Length: 184
Image 1 (tube, one colour):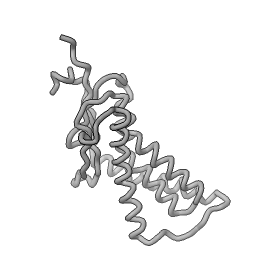
Image 2 (cartoon, one colour; image 1 turned 135 degrees about the vertical axis):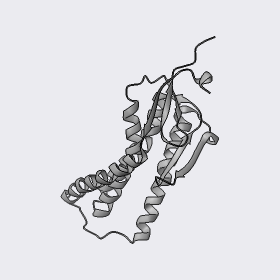
Image 3 (tube, rainbow, N blue to C red; image 1 turned 45 degrees about the horizontal axis):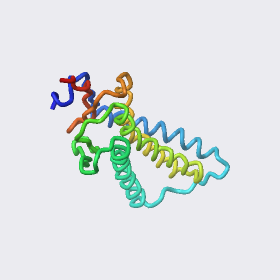
């Protein structure tokens, strides 16, 4: 595989436990800030949370949407066919994933990593401002916090040129970066 991709330049891996540990205080900080913002709006509604099964259904739907948005970014910006997008769950870390088995550029991988944050983050914040409540603040905090792994990978890739090749890690969070293969 390396002969096809060229020389491996870097290996980017994010520790699953570190992501899970970091996401808890991040969620709480976001929740505190977003509740403050929501409660300061004139049309704030201090309604109680919906039934727990509705909350669970919404959160599970958002997880599926998050991973589908990763696949959409691959299909649209990397021209990867749907068949090359693999979905699953890393059960030891309780993390769903969308995996790309084909090499793409660093530029495309960055977009692939951040696309769910851009879409679901902006939509949940818009919802918060239109319908400010504790529920919408909680929803926005969770939606933003679950993107921590994607943002972490993006930040680790910042120093690499956009035209290098990236191969998604198969069973870990992260990727390998390669130079273009030499012309023969």
